[in-house]
Image (tube, rainbow, N blue to C red; front, side, top):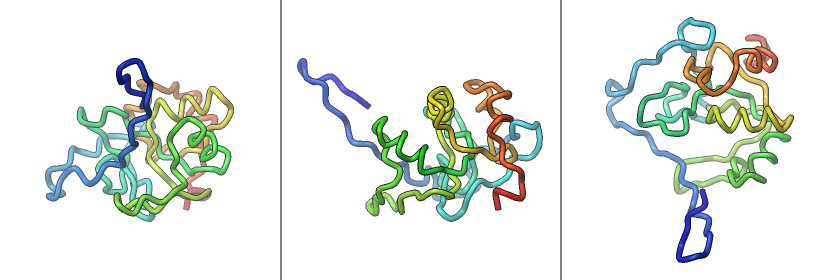
Length: 153
């Protein structure tokens, strides 16, 4: 994110969220996926989600709407890094191992849409993509990039 500092634009450090609650019972409900069914887990390894519980659940606290479960590709990782969000480099201070092609991750809906518009979107798992992603991304785009359940394992 760029911040204004007395006439000079500076890049503020990107922070990776830590678990938002120590008590797992304080998490918001999972909600439904874009198919109107139970929202499945996206990934436990690496641990993903705004709440770092493996699920693309969201709430009013999730300003980025980390709702799209994707299988990251090298093309997407390079695209994201070029846009200022390096998901490949480990950040041990945040417990973030860095992503590699094939990892599943909860992306911000707007970032996935940006990658889609640029032709760099990674494939997604509909079963693990939260229905709130539809506020940003048309269902037709998600269907176009949908993985079959067998490929996502």
